[in-house]
Image (cartoon, rainbow, N blue to C red; front, side, top):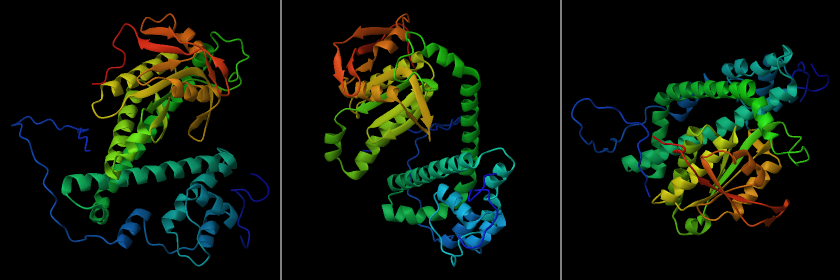
Length: 387
């Protein structure tokens, strides 16, 4: 336990619609088309205050100092946890917490006191939970509202009010899926740690002499970017709803291809996605599938794609290092529909008949000097197959 004011200290005084159904229910009887009928207007069944009590596990009856004392922390340390979770500031007079808050907030301090986590690790893990669940809730709410507007003929404001009545029946299923997904993702993470990390590092050493900029970094990964062509000009000609649907279609397609290809979607930035894969082959197949998908899409423009096999640093759910920067630079110089890799990645793929490598003219790239890009094209085999 750290001395001073850490998280574990004892209390101290004063401180255009693109419809593609994701789930199809098999009908063993007559197959009839069923038009979606607008839901009849309903009277409000639950007030916002009642819904809040349902979500928080009770009414807000506790002040922040009462919760901090009940958890066994100083107010300073408790505020560190609340800020990590993304909670707003509360005053000493605010009835902001419930008994359930008090019980849940004991979890991380207990792990620190038991020596399972350091204080810094506890705060970092808590911040990850806060940031990811915040984004997840916003995404889910907007998706539900958009669906209600599209299928029920409600205005945006009407859908937002109507959603309050529907949340109670969604709490259990969404919570169940959240826990299920987290366990599956953690299982995949353990497999990456235990089974494939060393093999990846050994593979990343091929064709290198140890002097590369990314040599000190701990993880071997294929890093790829996909960037929609002409997104800026398209966005200027679209209304808000059409632009949102375009971005959603792009992200959904990318997420599906990356997942099926065995990669991980790191983040999306408007018209661009960043992904990683554990082998150069997986990274290359994902890159080719992305380029092919958007070349064949009747609505979305083509995309530029680049992939680099190297080493990265993974922190805060993101990845860093020269490998990431080089992949971004290659994406910027790729032609629409083209996949570019660097010469080291080309060596890692050179003997694989599933890929055709086409060396390009040398390019001067900011931060890297002269590089030798290689265009990647599909060779034998089907590549990634989306069913």
